[in-house]
Image (tube, rainbow, N blue to C red; front, side, top):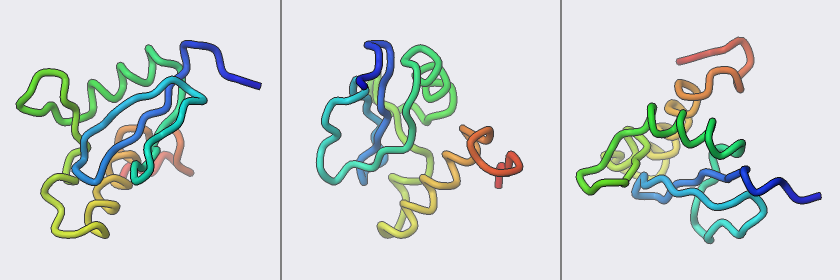
Length: 95
């Protein structure tokens, strides 16, 4: 069953740049999916919680661009998603 047109998938690149695709569409190889949901609610949350890049419209996962390696980048992504989406983690753990 396909999702309605107002659902999106949020993903990021190793650079930390956040992108969105309509639910059910292909996420590019090498990208990491970190959230799915209603377009308005999800995009509003990410817009409020993400770091804004120097270029207008560029959103970044905080800590990923500065990470020394891929392991540190993944740690930063996990920490940020726990903070930005605490309701999806057992006990609401923000750490």
